[in-house]
Length: 147
Image 1 (tube, rainbow, N blue to C red):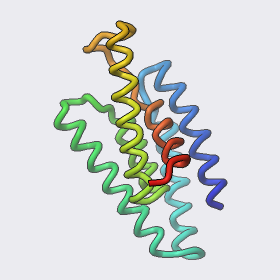
Image 2 (image 1 turned 135 degrees about the vertical axis):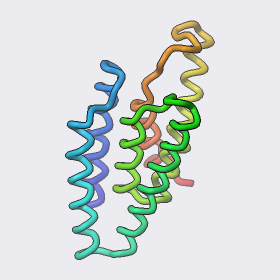
Image 3 (image 1 turned 180 degrees about the horizontal axis):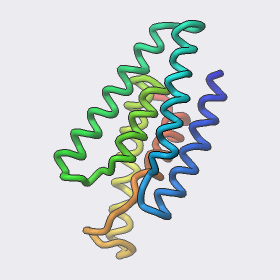
């Protein structure tokens, strides 16, 4: 079941990255159904696998959603609502420790690549850079790199 969940998340993140790069937004018509699936996934875990996993997933949701909402509030919209909801979805699906790694890796990769884009004058400092692809990259890096 775990491999199915990871595969589904990779496919979802690739698709959302494409949309975010093309339209500069992560649409609710994709995020909301993914949340519904994640809730059913947690109900399944609660009754058939392990209740502590569900508690950890909800902690991951509140941590990731809360931190990203706070960052968006402080930066006055520097982080979009779709990114906040996407991090919440990952927290609800992966749990606290895993979503913390995703946040760490996506932030580092986003910062490094953004600095590169600005230094080589591909983007200006004030240009908007979609964060969805960095979230996807952070997720993949969190799978590959064990901390």
